[in-house]
Image (cartoon, rainbow, N blue to C red; front, side):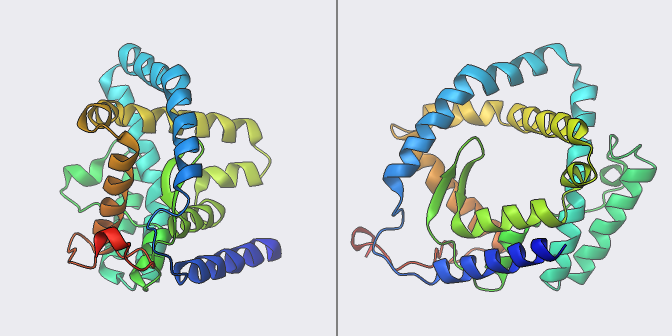
Length: 245
């Protein structure tokens, strides 16, 4: 527990420090990022996309929907914690209610009973919490297999995984096989949800890397601002590039 707390505060300090660094390049790690992007693209085409496509083809829609609901329900724990960290107490109450309802009446979350009752569904993570309290994006990152991120969001992702992810808990109690099975199923489910979006990215731009980077940054800005983005919504903690002035 002590080591986890140390990691938490060191990660938080790192996010705050890097977000305050100034540069004239909004993507200072572009060379490395493009290399990782190419690796991810090859891995996706050879392994992830075929597996996700086969899963979608052979698995009945209700079963696929059930597993997607299950993983979304697990994510509600992270959302509730970050609701509280952002002082969004009404949302925290609603999201906690969703989790309880879906976990009990929804058979461990496989049935989204809360949505049937028109209960709002929020998504919050620690990267959004840092942004809510004014921490900038920091440098844009492409993480192997995981894809687009930023220094702030990567830090937030790691903290969420360590502190509020039930799947991580299965590893911590020694259920390594169960942990690996759940992670694999979660990855396949996530990739299946993006099958159509992946084709859109490939067809939308001559430079899919830039398209995905800009789309990711805008999407995260919208999430941090709860959809009310303004002219400064894509603040990344860096000074504007000369080409953008």
